[in-house]
Structure formats: C-alpha cells, structure tokens
Image 1 (tube, rainbow, N blue to C red):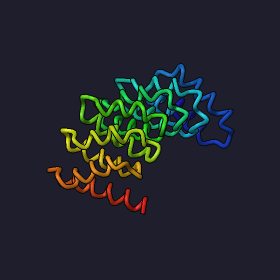
Image 2 (cartoon, rainbow, N blue to C red):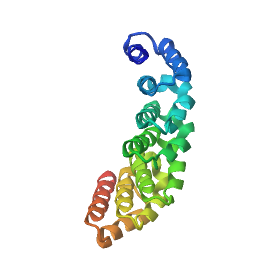
Image 3 (cartoon, rainbow, N blue to C red):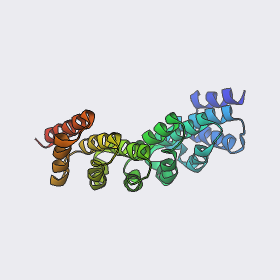
Length: 215
C-alpha cells in the first residue's frame, strides 16, 4: 500500500514543492526494501527539485542486501544531476559494486553529474580494478567537452594493460573533442600499434570525430 501511495504521489499533478517533502519524509523512516525502491525512484523523477534529499538518497547506495534499492538510488542521483555533485565520492565507490547493473547505473549517474565529477574520475583512472578504470573512462566520455582536464589521464590509459580500459579511453578522448597534439599523437600510436582490433577501431573513430569537429 505504501509503495502504491508513493508511486501515486509521483504521478499526480501537485507541485514538486508539495510532493517532494512528503516523499523525503517517508523515505527517512521506511524500512521495507520494496517501498524504499519506489520512494527513491519517485524522488529521482523530480530531478533537481529533489536536491534537498541527495544525502538521504546517497545513503541508499549502500543497502548491501538489496541491489534494486542501490540501483534506484544511483539512477535517482543521476537524474538530479549536477545538484548531486557532493556525493560524487560515494558514487565512485559504487563503480566497484558486485552487481553489474548497480555499477553501470553509478557510471551513468557520474556522467549526468557532469563537470563536477571530473576531478574524482581522474583520480579513479589509477584504480587497481580495471573495471573501475573502464567505468571511469565511460563516465568521462559521457561528460564530453567539460571533461577536458581528464585528457592527460586518458592518454596514460591508452597504454593500460586492460584492453577494455584502452578502448574506453580512446572513445572518451574522442567524445571530449578538440584535442592537444599529445592526445592526437597518442591516438595515432594506439590506432597503429595496439594489438586489439576493437581498441584500434576506437582510436580511429576518435581521431575521425576530433578531425570532423575542427575541420
């Protein structure tokens, strides 16, 4: 019943100023996971209007016994976008979540937060876990031109021992756009020398994308 009520609150035509505080109030005390999931999703649908409840949503990223709640929290924070910048470090932690879908939702959320997540993502490009490095590069690619400061870290990642990281790094450099001479040279070297065909293709596409922008 409470889950249905939460869904109803998110759908009715009342203003966010009336609905969001009520959703946040219920979220504070709710213990049932299936209701929590609905409440978190509902807050996410109000995007920036839910920014007051970013800390509460962040706390649900670590509901270890329910992946659906964790995924819903990451998705909601992504929808809130740049107003959720303060919890970037916590979303970074979720990049190593045991559940693939949860980690992917955190990756997408970091991309949606945008420029405010770049500094932390640059640091994560040195993480011990190749999946975390790969997801960080994917998030930087989603941020695009606002991630220009990450290009040096992405250049280094073109020589990563993991081919998935190298591929994502090349894609990210292309997504960020007009590049330095160092970046162009690194992409050319990757295109010419990398042993993995998919990495070569990613570097070639990045070069083509950058050239089309500056032409």
